[in-house]
Length: 258
Ligand SMILES: NC(=O)c1ccc[n+]([C@@H]2O[C@H](COP(=O)([O-])OP(=O)(O)OC[C@H]3O[C@@H](n4cnc5c(N)ncnc54)[C@H](O)[C@@H]3O)[C@@H](O)[C@H]2O)c1
Image (cartoon, rainbow, N blue to C red):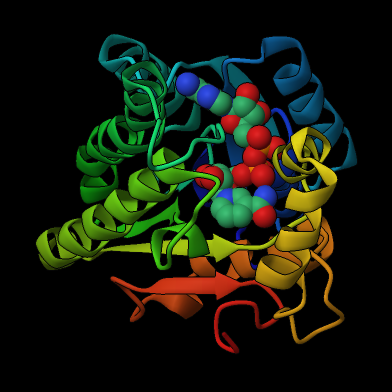
């Protein structure tokens, strides 16, 4: 029960790593509000987590790219939780695009959700976490933001921006005892499985050499509940109170061995 009494918002909570994070936090005793655009699935994830306890979980709609939506959802969540100690922010989208012909629409969509969404959610959380005398913000970057990504030009640029924002927010809000880090994951989630489904045979072979072969621990993407959940608990807990501004790969070695 490392998170007993902690009040936490988790974005992107309807599936993938957001859903696994809600489950991990509730299992660790926290009081959680999950948020997503996908309301039916989001509500079901929170209801199931709460049924398993011992913590609590509610659900609210949010579009992280929309300032009014973020501000309203965060205000309502904080009222329900009685304050805020941690924001976990996995919500994001991925579309494939080549550097030579990535379109303005795709570029703007990815930057609206992934980059503006990170700024808006972090900014909305800031005064509440400050009022709680400090806490933790956990963003989601990517190895794509660290290296050339031929099949995902706009996504890669958006994740690079998330890394820069995370360092800047950490440098700015450290004085308020707020730590800001980013997870760089490699997890078998719907986002990953959908990207694999969209890929041609040739792209899948390229992905093996680029993404899987370098995962030292078995050449396989991780399981979000087993491999990511405990790390999310650690970063929300007081045990991580002196870690900030870090890009933290949780990827079986994918980043370190390349
Ligand atoms: N899966 C991987 O291996 C991998 C690798 C590198 C980085 N990431 C990053 O990890 C994070 C989690 O990824 P995932 O694989 O769990 O993704 P996912 O697609 O399985 O889940 C993302 C969730 O975000 C929600 N979402 C999308 N747009 C939203 C919006 N505008 N407002 C609110 N919610 C919205 C979706 O509805 C979905 O429930 C993302 O930031 C992703 O970019 C994932």
